[in-house]
Amino acid sequence: MQDVFSCPDPVICVWDGPKGSQKRRDIFPGYKVGRKAPDTGIYNGFHLTQKTLEHSKAVQIKVPGYEADDVIALLARRYAAKGALVAIYSNDKDMWQLVGESPKNVVCGANPLKGVLPKDTRLYKTWVGDSSDKIPGVPRFGESLWEENGPRRLQRATEMIFAGQDGWQKQIKLQPKMVSWLEENPDQLKIYWEIVGFLDVPEDLVVEHTTIGQPDFNKADLALKEFMQ
Image (tube, rainbow, N blue to C red; front, side, top):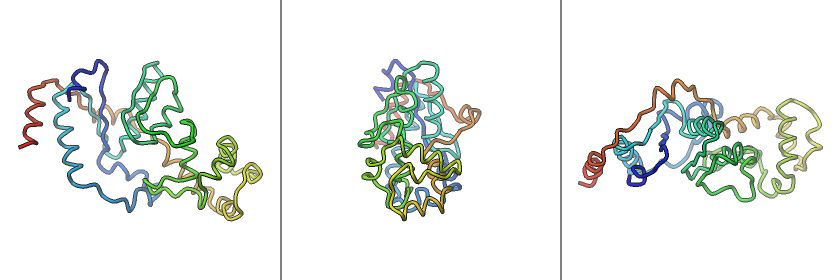
């Protein structure tokens, strides 16, 4: 809280909205299915933080039907396009996609994917998968094949698959079963690409669900003391 009060720059805290995962589950039903539910104490901590931040200068955004990632992407792109420096405090590696889009204007606190440039984060997760979000990727395609083929050739092959063009098989080196899977399931690869990226959030919804805090250190302190009792 002291950091928020003393920070000279705007502070925007973005939260997952109710049913935030549903849009991606509509695209891919297996999205985040089977993940271990966080301890209830985590949610209590979220509630306390939100309540306390109401008494700081922080802006809070929680858009129903959207994950925080999507709103962060909207904001980062908007401000980076205006030349502002955007610092994203998150341990979510997906945020590196935004660094890749605007390397001079966006910085991120998450650890990057090993051996993957920020601009290739989405491509990597589409092919290799993301176990934390239950995205399987191309069956049996892993880091070794990623390194062997390289992102540029994989990007070209991906574009050809999405466009329905033949000949992508000669662009990259894959096991026969992988080639067969991609030939039979091109739409599945496109689904992974879509959910790994950021969904468009209507700006009017963001405005509607934005709360601007009213700085009052004493009220913030009381909210924290109430939690400690």
